Image (cartoon, rainbow, N blue to C red):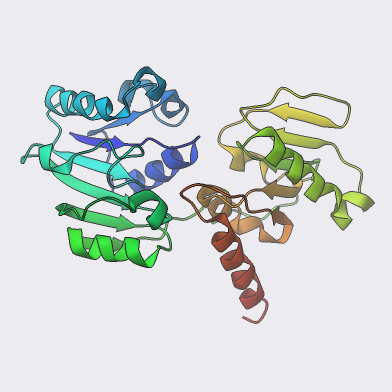
Length: 281
């Protein structure tokens, strides 16, 4: 039995792991250790649901994880994004020897996450790199991984059949706070297409209840099911937002936001450079 340890914000971490599980051809023999968000992405009987707020001392998450490793006879533990856990709660030296350890590597602001910690020797059997990385983060992986895999995840239904679909609304897709959604609304309203073509705005988010004549708030997962009918797609620059909008770059506008561990500004820069390069292919 394999266990994926996924503690991060929103649905992005879970959706990435879902893609990786499919890519690695892992069928039924797995469990997801995460928050209640996991049940939106995975079958509920595959989820070990926890609320980090129930753990006043975040370090106590690790003893609970060890109990799950024993209870379900876990042979492989996959750590998503954070090699020592979101709260640095994991002590790799205490993971049972019979349990292989794997790391799913997305970009981290390494000095913020790992700075101040003593150098650790961690034996990752496999590390799966799915993003650009901080140089220090990559050095950490080289020092601690037996085997390194560079994988490219693809947007859902990338090979879509092109057909004429009426574009009925402007879509803002974001799970961040109110002030960030306000910034995305402002970005949309400054766009020339919005000024010329009057269509309603749909905000797809789990965190707002705002409703008025021109703005409707919904929470639909998966979000990409809305993309075809959107006149413009407006997002931040998180990993999943930038991945799933690859087939829709001509109508995707985006705004990077500051994150503690991620670098959305670098991700935005890379998308702009890719878009410019595509014009000359």
